[in-house]
Amino acid sequence: MLAERFPRRLAHMQVLVEEVPPTDPGPWDDATVLLGRVIPPSRAHPARVIVYRRPLQTRCGSEAELESLVRQVLSEQIGSLLNIAPEDIDPGAWTD
Image 1: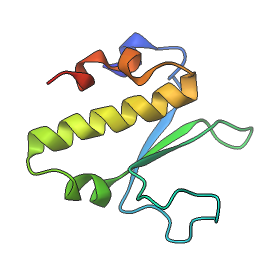
Image 2: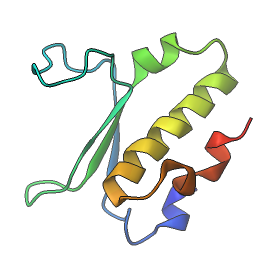
Image 3: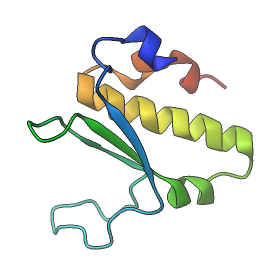
Image 4: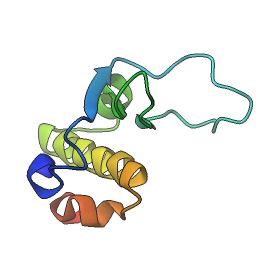
């Protein structure tokens, strides 16, 4: 579990699940559909990692694929937040 590997760094992080990403991306945003997003901490709120349920589900043919993809997306977003390679966050998410 990630919280056990990085207890102090993830103590106040929130993980949220939303149905779909925002529909009005800015002109600087990528044209691809987001699978997840990280919002850095501020005085108003702790760090947040958001995963988008529907885009994740539509890319997977089975529960095992979905679990693997969710782990990869979480690893990427948390890695971005902590400035650590995603493979170092959850090494098991990247093995077949």
